[in-house]
Image (cartoon, rainbow, N blue to C red; front, side, top):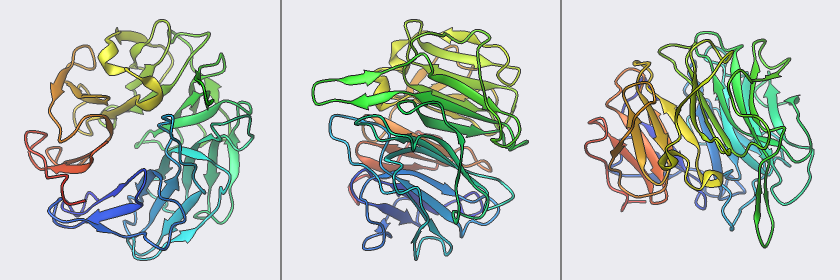
Length: 332
């Protein structure tokens, strides 16, 4: 929560939502007995009203063991009480994005049921805080949306990462010709698939993120024969490959997470087995030690970028020093 630098939430794949008010010194579970799914896929705190929190269930990082979700929940009192608000059949949710000035306008990236064809996939929009939902991006019954990034200076512009990810008892299917980056400039009413230098054909999992410091700059991490980190400097009209380093996209079905620095357009983080940081716009990266391997999410305080919270396979850890030191994982 930007206005409260010691307050953080994190969601687990097996233990609900947790909260700290003393930057990671102590954590308290806040959804036990209220949310009917242990697997938390996404959390979004409304920027315009931090009492409003949305939680999506069913992690979209689909290992061989997958815990399906039961939809979306909302809290109106900073996590004390929770109400189920729909998308019961969403299966696995990738991201939730809330309009920066309207806490009732929310978008959900839905990967869907990862065990077979399913029509509840794509991007869903609610304009009334989850009372009703509209499917605004639907590609087909096997290709869902796993990532979603919103232009903070113009929230009508969003970038969606579409992926066909399907688990079988004997294999993982990852990729389709319909997968890739999709762009809307009208708040989700219409979408177009981005081309202009992005690889086409059989595309696997996609991560996408727009820079808050320069909203014309967008990064996309693609699983592909020509996979790697791509960047656009004109809002997604054209793209260039920055690096093919496989360190950024190992086991893509499990990662592909990008976090731009909110103040510096040239600083961007990629979460994978290791947490990697670039200060030259994404061309080269250095490793930043974290409390545990297998990194899945990173949030950077827009008011003080030394304050971050990192989610990995060990739990959640807070740094007040830009990643030089982290709070412990042994209190969760």
